[in-house]
Length: 307
Image 1: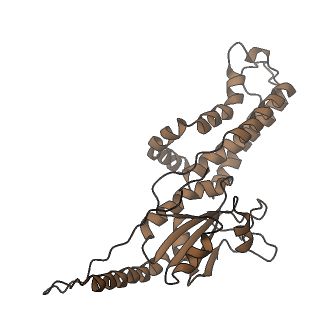
Image 2 (image 1 turned 90 degrees about the vertical axis):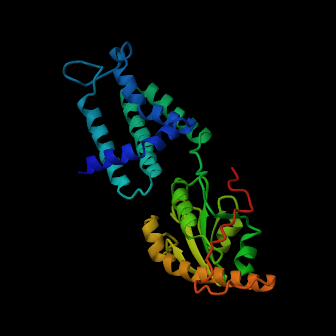
Image 3 (image 1 turned 90 degrees about the horizontal axis):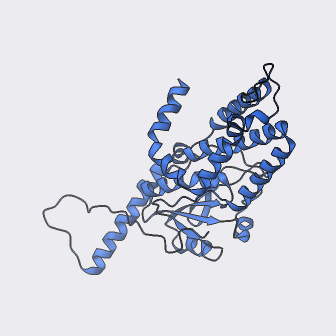
């Protein structure tokens, strides 16, 4: 059943996967993932490789290599149980495949192992995963604008994501947060992001650690009346994040987004009526319907991504 679900998910996301494969990061990752398979099966090359098979066939996997590959599959399945987005699933596959390839190449030939490890280091230093650039209604803060914006109108509720571009979890969560902003953004409920990897003062001011060991990235904080109301993930006494799944359902439930959104729309309506009174516009006579509620979806005034 799990295999059928995985195949269906793959076919559903096939157009998106095809677009990803055209990007240098994914092209290189795919090549590095299948590197050992290509070397072991390549005609004219595999004949010169060492093997522990009883039949001496050096162009096929021996029993130890099969064990390592099966262990790799089990690890990927376990890690993907907590993955939310397709990017996380593929990222886990790429990461653990590279680790398995390092072990396999070192076992095959130490020179090949050193060469592959050097390629992995060069890849990590020079090739970064592409950032999410899809539609969203999110305002990007700097260390100088976040406090001012949160205090500008205390009637506005803000959900702010504290992230870092180097964090793979933050990159995977970007599309989820963008979808939430498209569904719930209105005048009284706004969405914001701040790169605490770049603005270290903000991380200290709001108590969000950028250490990979703390596992606090990404962090979502709900601000009501200009003050912090809810934070996920929560942080224990040792400064480490309590495990929490960043999916859309959990965020809607934990932050009461549906209830907050209904209250926020009242602010939209009150502002609309106030503007009509100031402009001298009177409601149509004979109409018993309330004014149409509109969500003022404003484009971010700051740069969407600062790479």
